[in-house]
Length: 195
Image (cartoon, rainbow, N blue to C red; front, side, top):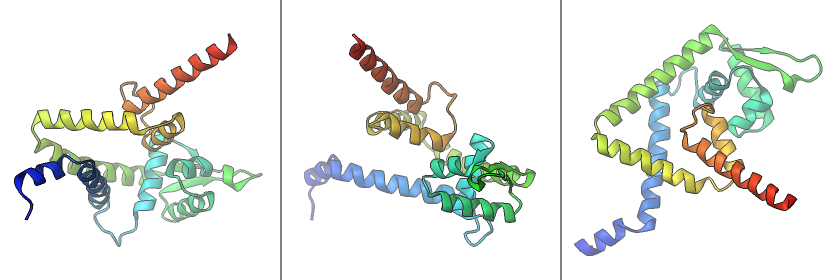
């Protein structure tokens, strides 16, 4: 049996923090998906939901942009879009020269589906946050931002994170702050090399 001191030491270990972080990420992902897509055998799968959300956040997008944003192959992106076209949730305007350059846009039904998914996800998340004391909510946000500021190790990492969220205009966003830090460091480095 673990005594109180051993238990406290284990709780304060990096290993325990990593395990809690893994469970946190898994819980957020699965619960958010479950709340957004309540019928797992339904017509809109997680992958389709993510594709719809990307187009919703970024507007008319090419297959290449969707694939990059979702970090999937071009062929996987094209297959997702084909499935969404068949469900009449997006339209795909083909380029005469290259099918990959097609622009994908949400239909009215697609916008409604995304809005419904986002509303259900927000309701789930809000219900969790509302049950927390204000000081814990602030501590959670501060901790998550602090972690991301250290974990996003390069401008490319920050760009990938930014592409997924679509809130690029929010200057107070931690990801934009990280990107600005890297851009400033790069400009400073270039300025020094020119001297």
